[in-house]
Image (cartoon, each protein chain N blue to C red):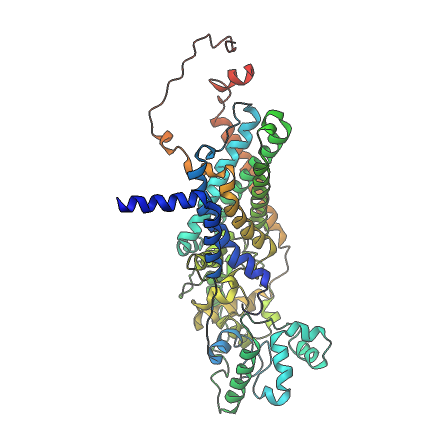
Length: 235
Length: 290
């Protein structure tokens, strides 16, 4: 260990990522093999769907867009930096990212409120769900905080975070990139690895088994065998 | 067929000893993490010290280190190098004098420093001090007067419109300067409006830019050093910026956040519009009937 880096830094930025990744891969595979029928996100939309809309839709569009942005910064950092060389492009990119980050937070808060207030939804919420929602809320709120207080993340992610993450992939973590960053950024990084490690123990595994073929399979016709105007199910 | 049976054996082992297998793999991964590197004292000095110190080239942010070993005892110097802040806090009068001469800029603890390295550095500095002209005797940056073109070029480099030749990221990724316009520059690192005054002089700022030595900037620029021309333009830009008027730097932040909130409200309205028929059809009757 080099001076200027504490033991804690080493643990959080050089060891935790590997524990998280190992848990992610090994437990995901093990759970798929041993408990295949738990491999989903238990739906609660049939319990009610008014509040559910404001939770489900903003959250998923928000998080998917923001995650994609992180992956792009990781894969083509030099191109992102070149793109950001024109201030207007940078501002539009950052503004868009902030909007989708805020959508994620709105969705998460709506999820938490609905799961807590609506008793039927609360009943089907497991302890692992609550922990996960807490972690995701920390992640989304810290992300928005960073976007506003420490701009411009799309540029400095490409410059400093991307090489750090690649150094982890090369099995030679260079934690100097991150040990002196502001606390919110460090929290965001550490919490991200916690989420990755916790991933296979949660409903997040549905990400690995999304029925993508729904996007191109033939539509299914649903027919009711009673008058749709009566709005009543046969008892 | 042999393959299948051995695969099955592994599968059944993982099933019966699943957690043991995971723990064993985890241990392997954790034990495998151990970086190590070796560097000559000269390279180390160039990367970590030359941004603030010369050997025989006069004062930059920090003092000229020529014959430093004759001004102070070796053991004191090693202690100071290992943890400058602690030595200053201890009330040591010589450390206080150094701090005053550096106009309050505290020398950072250098990443990767160790007792052995500090001693090797002092030996190297003594050798270089004995030379007629040390290889660390100062920057090669021109001292011609700055022109408006220099300032304009520096601004383009700062923003990133003019890309750094060696591929380093633009300053505005992490730093801002008053009067940049728009939503201003980044705020991961410090505001650089007054950096020219803080660092104190053209050669000092130029030397600093030759090898930025903070913990975060060092690795980012290690493989992408700035050229002498780029440094000259940037120093001109910073010298100009330090004379700019003060303005409230929180305004762009607030504007950015408000734009984000507005955009989010708009996005929610759009989503609501797209799915406005969402409560009809299949689910609603089911929910109502439950």
